[in-house]
Length: 422
Image (tube, rainbow, N blue to C red; front, side):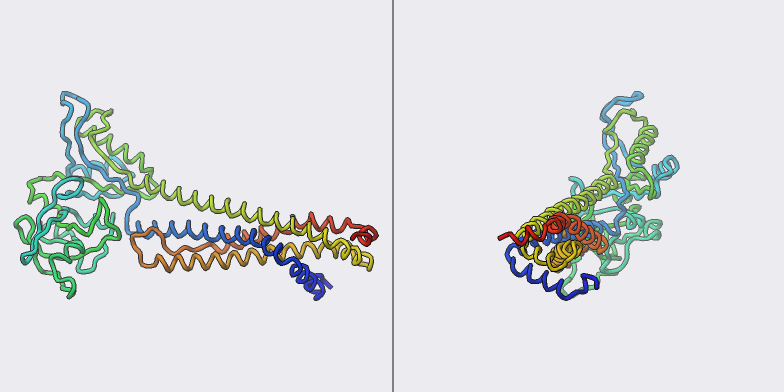
């Protein structure tokens, strides 16, 4: 009968472990702690990845934000310090020149990047907020979560409508939010003009590019208010999925310098922020964390498995007489070897499962504690069960391999020598 199905085998393992409770427990902690660290760190890394993906969901991460500045080098008869501008006519020019561009969303604002906001009022309530002139395509770059109504559409742009989409903070200040007042169709005063509210939005996280303390009106209406003609403050450029964003960024600047007679060496004429490049760094950091987790957890597990080998060596030495008696009674070397190997596997597997269970409990607690916290970059920390199963399998295999050391030592014990031991 196979050793695995012998009752005596499991009784011997039980009594062997029972007789060395403290030593066995301390040894199991090593492997269990390794598996615990592996599960918790891997789950935490995945939770951070999920958190950042959730934060950036609905946001075109393959984006470049471009704005005009001043020249820093005299060129072609133009002096240094010439003020540059972006124009709506630049959009077809750039999309024709740079075939890796998917689309461009123009935008202008009052209240961003150090500029003063606009005063807005309704029924005696007044406050200053950021005013954005935008187009419907902007919602593809950063999708707004609408709590009332809709975002801007093409008709709003084409007919220069006085319509506005307001942030949640604006709504709470100018309307009766506690009574859930419906603002759609009602007016607010912006710069002496009345605008009909068509929507209310909420951003996931307030920041320098988006805030609930802002409003959106059609870019055409914005340009009329400020006599801008076709000038705009910035472009949000979204590349095609497989494009090299750094090359797109460089090509866009090069083509604009050529169009507006700017020195090719002038690095100040047009400013930019490459979100795709920064997002790539972030995803690389998260991947590095997961790799580090696997290495740290693996080394800790290995240290624990080696500790199991040491404890079994001591156990074999203490059981020398017992092994000698078994050999004298006819036990085969393979039976003695398999007995020791099985003890190694039992300790390793029990430790690993215990560490896995405690690790999953910690992840469940962390998931519950961060539930609903939109601004915190941590969400749904999970582990890939394939990775855990793989780690557990490697752990058992290592346990078998390292268990061969005490097993071979037990086999080499000659019955007559073992019976003479004290």
